[in-house]
Length: 119
Length: 111
Image (cartoon, rainbow over all chains, first blue to last red):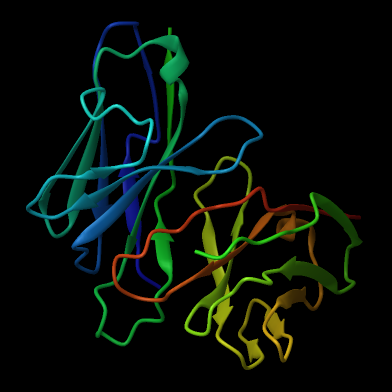
């Protein structure tokens, strides 16, 4: 199946700093990518939909100035957590769907996740 | 997307078939049933999906009732590596449809 790769897989940073997480579709193009966050023992919560060449669409309650999303190419989306604080510590996961019409089955492919710990 | 209801947790003996139920009584005619699983500290993994016919692949089988209001994911010979949280999601396939995850079923395979 298609591969989605995230980097870094884990990161520790000091409070007040910004952290960038990359999400790449390795063998397919993705006009849309999705960003989720997951707290311990909870389900995945959709944060935003990343659209190539345009602004991301954020879910209700997610601060767009806090979580900056850039989708500059068909294979790369980045999530930047700005001025991170301990409450931003979480597991961040990206996903992408193969562009429709290419014979895929519509499933989302997920990255390995990036664990952020803010001290 | 239609809402789904799954049991919070289930246990299954290693080597036996694991049957995971999902209710989706408000599913619409053009919505698919997708199953994903998430092993601890990893991203979710696609398992299988279907519209109205039963489906089988190398990982699992999916049984959808005739009225499409419920489905069952079957792992025919569960192994310890199948211990994970299993999510049943109803959504339209393709396009830019986002997936909304419920709480899922935490399946524990017992040695």
